[in-house]
Structure formats: C-alpha cells, structure tokens
Length: 533
Image (cartoon, rainbow, N blue to C red; front, side, top):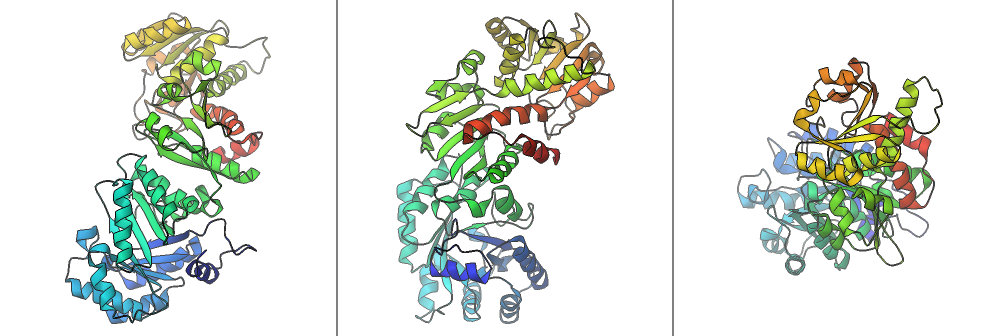
C-alpha cells in the first residue's frame, strides 16, 4: 500500500492489518454532485457514514461557484480527503466556460489543501507546467482520459498510459466504454502491469466488473454513488452495493471470481444470494452480474483459473454446453448447461445442469402439499400431464426432469417446429403457443412456464388466458422477478396450487454453491436471504 493510501486508511479509520495491508488497498470514492455547497457538505457527511475513503467534489455540478469562498468551505466542511474535478463539456462534464478560469480554480483547490485534483490529459502538460514546480506536497494530480466510444487495444492503452505519465501525473486515470464485457480484460491487463498508481474503469453495464474487480487487480480507486440515480459516469454502483453486496473490502489478489452469465442479467438475485453465502462460511470468492453477448468469447477471454465458476441463464444455456470440455451426462441429455466449473488442476470447463432438480422438487413439494401431505409412494408427478412453455435450456431441463419422474410431457413454444424437436428428443408431444388456450384434454394438468414472459419490466404479460387456467391443478413460473407474476396470480385465483420461480432458484443454487466451493450449502441462510426479497 502506498503512503497516500496508508494516510487515507488511517484518516478514515480503515482497519490496517498487522502487516500494514488491507485485503486490498483500492480506495472507495463517492462522487459529490450537489448543486449547492451546502448540499455537497451534507452529502460528504453521508459519504463518510456510508464507508467512503474519499470524496470526488464535482465543481461542474454547482449552479453558482465562487472559487475563493466555496473551495475553502468545501475543504473545511469535508470529513474525508478530497478530490476536486471540474469537468468540461468536451470531456463529458457540465462546465462550459473559459479554460483559464477552470484551471485556476483547480490550482486554487491545491493551494487550499485539496488531497487530489483531476486534470484532463488534453490540458495536463499546461496545468502541471503552470504550477512552476510549486505544487503543494500534500496534493496529488490525477491525469485522466475518458473514451465514451469504446475500449482501445492493449497496445493503444499502453501508449495512452505512457502519454499520461509523461505529463508528470502522480496517478493515471483511464475510463473507457465497454461494447462487450471482454473489453474489460484489456483494462485489467493495463492496471496489473502499470508501474504507477492507476485508476482503470470501464463505463456502461458491460463494464461493471471493472468497478468491482479493480480491487483484485490493484486499481487505485473505484467509485460508489450515494444513490443509484445520481452517477458521475455510466455504470457506477452504489456505495451500498459496492461494500455490502459485492463485499469490496474482502476482495484480494487471490479471490476467486464467479458470476451469472446472461442477457439481460441485471435483475438476477444470484449475486445477493451467493455473496452473502460466501461471506457466511468465510469463502474467499466474489459473485458478479456478467452481461455477456457471446459466451464462447467470454470464456476464452477470462480463461484464468481465478475465474472459477459460472451460473448460466437465458439465452446462453445451450451455447454453454458447446463451450465445455466435459459435460455431465444429465446436462448432455437435456442439451443445456446452467452451471460451469473451471477445474483448478488443468483449467478445463465442466458443464452441469442443476435447473431441473430445483424446479422438479419444488413442483413435487407443491403437489404433495395440495394433497394434505399424504405421503404417496414414488413421485406425485407420475402419470400427470405436464405442460412446459418454452423450448430453451430451462424448458428442456424441466421436460427432462418431469419425464424422468413418470409424467406425460407436452412442449409448448411460439415456433411449433422447435417444440416438436424437443418433444421428439425426450419423448413427448408438441404444441404451438397459439393453441395453448384451447388445449385441455383433461383436468388436473400441471403447467410450467420457463420463458421470460411476465418478467420485469413486462409484468402485465402472461403466456395463457386466465380462463384456460381452470384446467390446471398446479402452475409453476420460472420467472421470479416479480415473485408473483400475473400468471401465478391468475392461477391462484382459479384455485390452482402455485409454485414460484424463487423455489427453483434456491434449489438450483444449493447445488451450484456446493460445486463452486466444495462446501455444503448453508440452506437455512439461503432461505433467510431470499425471504428478504
């Protein structure tokens, strides 16, 4: 840890271990974007109580700014070390005035005792030269470059770092934009190999992992906002998420990385579940949202054994199977993988399917419950007509599981040919979604929706009319955001037993946790965590 970080650690009451090392030395900085000095001072106090190490004071967000009075007031009023940024419009900020006035204000901030100032690469030479070698000892200059279009090649990024260093920067800051999650790997590469303190962040949802894993790869700082709506750059997490959902302080160079691969993926509750569980058993792992466009590219790019395991969700479950070196026989029969483990000994990818276990046992429990707990021999699914909506990975898994338990299976899909294909594979019937409302050969059927119909934000959608639900004794929905979908609400109104996607989610997570960690799943803890949501 450098002397500045140690100073900040002690100034902010951070615990430094007996070797003088935190689990990581990456600082957490809160952007302060109030329109008045008074609001900024209130927010700085909140930032301190939220656990920030320093604050970034965005002078360009102030409606009125009197440099002499306001800089003194801000530095005096801040309970934390300060970083002053006065971002012009041409670098993505709000300041639209004279350059000399802007740079004079940053020089004045240094004079009055700012710990850091952020100066854009374009004007950094001029700024550093204008200090005439009289830079206050306490102040450090961060020289920053923002790219709102893309993330350049490793070679171009290396040249950019060299140009920033050549200005006399104390700290290098590079912010790029992720067009694909694999772009972030180039920033990790630069951060790890940099000889100077480096802030390397990638903007946008696909860049989120850069803001969390910078703690693993030795980044100088990351930003956490006070509120999710008020960000100083796209994709910033809140302080609360950074410190408590992602356990940022506990991430170290040897922390194993796990995550849920999907598109969309932001709705997933898996990070809440796994990160709390990892913490509860003292396992050194971090679990992330991974917005992935191409799973093969992702797995190839993040090929280190530190990227140790993944949950796979819509739409990647079938493509995931093709990426694995070895596939569990059940997953092979289903034709879909929802859990990938990277074997530590040789880096090989192993594919499993835990989807059907969680869903089928939840449905069986639901059926047993509706028969007043009478213990029937064998599975209550045996002989039942089991209707599966959806022909993707989850649909295949449920159809396979129901068939194994002795149910008669019908696959329903928008495209009939796709339904037919899966029905032929597992030995069942096929039906087009358009015909589902009129399909009721018998009463007491079971319905399982495995599509994203009814998932947030489209919560008013449902795959079947309420009238048709009268013919079902149990309805299951794999969607768990919201917990009670329109499909489940209407099924309950028709008198059916309902089973939420949360039951399937928790069931499959038990299995994944054990594969990820080699430890027994803390089942009660899982239930407690999910009960809060």
